[in-house]
Length: 288
Image (tube, rainbow, N blue to C red; front, side, top):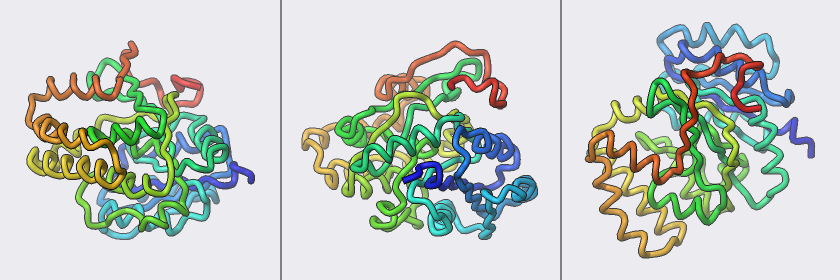
């Protein structure tokens, strides 16, 4: 199998004109070239579509405008339009480092039992003047256990098998948030998970702030705790993990500074000293 011809990148976007150029450029800068980029516009009202159309001269890039249908339907449409067995998710406000597609496709090709592989990622969320490398568990058993406490597979860093996702019924289009975490629970019943320890994505803080501002603490605490409960139950994790659910619920109500320290502790975040995000050009990527 030629892995270079088996990667579909799905980019769903709503009002992402500010970020879409550097996002697409990060895919164009990949070390492999035989990919396809499927852009699904979810009813943007800014200049997102105009920006995207500039890249359609590249035959590997397609644009699908659906109107405002929601993230779940947009993701599922991207999957239906894809032709590759390996699907990489790309958020519009994030960028993929040049070797992301090659490394993850190679990993899935070498590990047929793995249905989804993520990676560590670089984030500047904690401080505007510092970047953090967030390293999630690498092995399947550790990833599953972590799912009882938080989401150890960063959606925008994940590449998964199309056939496996189709088998479990695609994304839940009725969910308001955490579509990825809910999908992982179902996908975990089909095969194993993995994370590549090397950062392959730079994650913009906008994604985090959008989630926190759109949904109330009550919604996040109830919904998040329910997901962790389902992970323990459906993935048949150790029953003692049920005892941690009340603590998980409480964390949503703690001060932001306390939550930050807890998140850093449980996800093994590492701080690297940089003044700002590097220029988004190939020669200045921080990891090669």
